[in-house]
Amino acid sequence: MRVPVRPLVLVLSLTGLVAGCGPAADDAKSGTKTPPAASAPAPSVPPLMAHDPPSWFDARGKVALPEVATKGRTNLAGQVRGGGTELPVLLHDAQAFVASPTGVQVVDLATGRVMGEETAQGEALRGDAEGYTLPPVLAGTEVLVPFLTTTPASGTYAAGGSVELVAVGTTAPYKAAWRTTIKLPEWALRSTKATLASAKATVAVVGAQDGTAVVTVVAGDDSVSYGIDTASHTLRWTHSGLKTVAVGTGMATGLLDGEPLTPFPVGVDLATGTEKWRGEKTYAAVMEKAGPGTVRIAGQRPDGSKADRLLDVTGGQVRADMPPGLNVMSCTHDQVETLVCEYAFGVAAVDPTDGRQLWIIKEGEGSRKPPRVTSVWHGRIYGRGVGGPVALEARTGADMPTPPKAAPLLVNEYVGLVLDDNHLFSYPAGS
Image 1: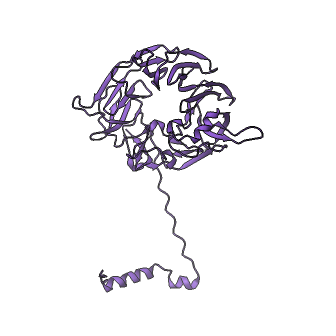
Image 2: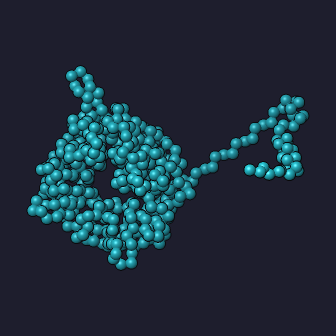
Image 3: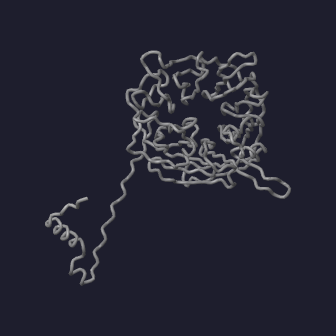
């Protein structure tokens, strides 16, 4: 390679410039020191503004969330398994509570700064993050974070497992307000050696209301639910075999073990754990939240016919049948009034109070192509369409006039959380 010859005048001028940067000769002789240059102030970060719901998201102000938010959650296609609602993240105002198997971090969504951190006191039952840590839950002025921990052997007692529930304050210094520990059944400890994902234990705070928080632990076909008093921090009730799905209107609603693969939908009193109603046993049942006071249950009835219904959680009565053709769709409530359902070839919206289908976009029908939905929040659907990120009005299905510029996995009034190259970023919301 030939080295270019530099012009002499340039070399001389650079030499003079370097010489001129040092202290003057008189200063050196007198010992006078040149005062240090004042450091430039750090650029201020503009506060996040609330927009309910957001119309678009600004990549220019993005900040990274801790890697644990997506560790073990993405597939080979760079998508989050289970969708954003199963990320171990709770958005609360302009903060994110990011959980892991061993602790929780509180992140300022404007700056990305970790403002507080709490850890479980017990040793983690499983130390990995393969998608088995579920989101924390807000309960008044506290965020409830559950951990699966081990109990060491002592005397004649063998080692066991526990749920450690930690309540973290939602204001500085974001420390534990209280914590409590509940002993787990033996099957939960065995789940740590399971090789199948479906058999590994998961723990979730399903919800909290009227001073009771409901925690559910599931491993394969085994499950148990606990009602915990958030004032005294003590165990109110235990319901073996219950996988709680929804908490509301004074009830904990879920699926109760019956015959193999054929559970019953049940509702238990939130304060006492007493069973209040039991529905028809359903083979291969799947239950989802469908709005305040409503759950959806789909599966097969004892006579072999398919069931896909909306139930009132207060007494288990059938509100309505779901519209035909939506049985293969998973649905998400927008936290206002609409149930949004999707699968690979279509997107639809349903009124959960009466089961009416409001609209549907199906592949191969009409001129519109169904988007791949990434999140649903407060009357807005966000996702990826054929022309890039898209937002739809949940009640009508109409394209919103302002492109959202991103397809967030989780949304609140301040930010959207966007997956980029297997990392999760917070984008400020705009309107």
